[in-house]
Length: 316
Image 1 (tube, helix red, strand yellow):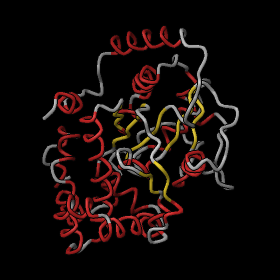
Image 2 (tube, one colour):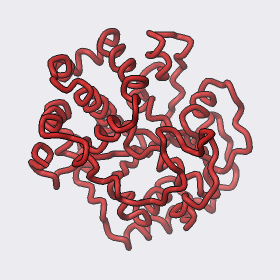
Image 3 (cartoon, helix red, strand yellow):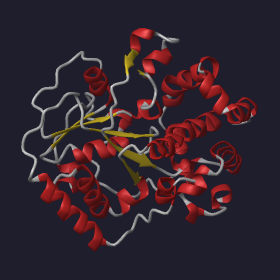
């Protein structure tokens, strides 16, 4: 195991508030030295991770910072494709792109529409990632799967087509996850197994990028919603922007890129304050058989990221 991998696995979310403030002070000092930015690409950082792991919440939070302009998936893909110009850019531009989480070391970016249309290469873009910072959202596999299943038809409309194409047409994927794909095909709970496999291959990318030395900040969803001040100080320090209290109050702010009903992608309510009520929601959705399928598919990865859960991953 590489030193970098060992570092992330030994990460303690509730690290000393004094050390966090010190890092924040250093970052703020360095930030003041940089006044002019020449942006060759339409983004300075990406928000990645499995879908339903808090990427939208992070986008809404960071959008409240005066130095950050943060775009959701549809606008992000238009910017990456060069279909729309970057207008009124703030000091930093971030793109929320969970669809691309596992593709940052590939030669091309494949949007979900590529898979949904059976491999439509007009929905494929050159990979323009060149070492920008990554905020990688991590969430308990059980809660992530439960969230995927709870959103009406999300799995069938968006993720099944992607997973099916990868299994049939992407050799690297089918070879890497041959065992998990076999389990999925035999599973008595195929929707649960499919959701668990999505979490697995998305989160596997975290360790791939750490080994490659990409600038990456893992953010645990559970810590973000239970200790938002601590976590957002870390995020601001990572992005080298000054701390602003506004990031704790996204529910009071106006937001861009919302649906006509005022919701963000994934039916996220931007008027909902940061809270921890969704932590442990799996207990209301998943049965013992579902948990067993999740354990089979996620393997040791869940235990590495959530060692405190112990064998409760299987039994609750």
